[in-house]
Amino acid sequence: MKPSNVMRIRSFGLLALGGFVVMGLWVPQIQTQNSQNVPIKPSPTREHDPARFPLVEFTSDKKDDESRKQINSRYEQYVPFTIGIPHPDTSGHGVYDHVKRPDAIPTDADLVIMGQILSGSAHLTNGKRSIYSEFVIRVDEVIKQDQAKEIVVAENIIADRLGGRIRFKNGQEVTYQAMGFDMPAIGKQHVLFLARDNKSPNYKIITGYELIGDEVQPIDRVDTAKIHKDKSAFLKQIKPPTTPTPQL
Image (cartoon, rainbow, N blue to C red; front, side, top):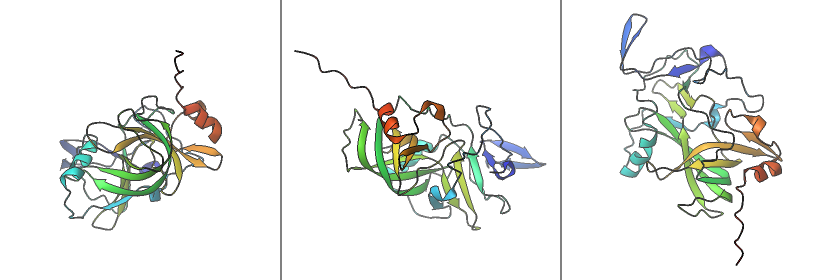
């Protein structure tokens, strides 16, 4: 990815840019590193692929019902801006640079599952101020059970994360993603670390690993030195310790 092709998304109430005043619009800037001031290097095994990011039409007039509005609200806090039409000569890649990257093995996940991504869809938040992607996942194995709601094998669950693709009225497609975060691949099997909150009925993807043969590939830029690359060893590594049964 060329630095000149990446746009940083920031929120400003009033901006002066090149002698022009821009009110409430995101402004493209050169982005060379993440919010932790650590240079981002292209992954040798999982390059950025816009096709993994579900697509939504910015011009859609579809009205959201109350349940969808509730789900939309989870991601409004990240980028409180009004989306403008980007210049057609840009590459069409926007970056949220203020999202903390996850641990390689998040210990605070409410649910950890192995499952297949069945489908994905992108949604704009209320007021079209940001975008997130929603995935339907078939559960193949429950590695860490949700203590608030039992999840069973073969059940379909829904999880989402910040980012997605927008097609604007001029035909340009822009991919938005948090720096260092990617999307799970539809049709592929993954191990996903998920969280829940009181903002949405959906789970939220903390991080995940795509299972490729006997190997695991992180979908995000995490410290891979902390994880086993072999599938069997990795699954043993992330299983929570079992509590011994008390002797009577």
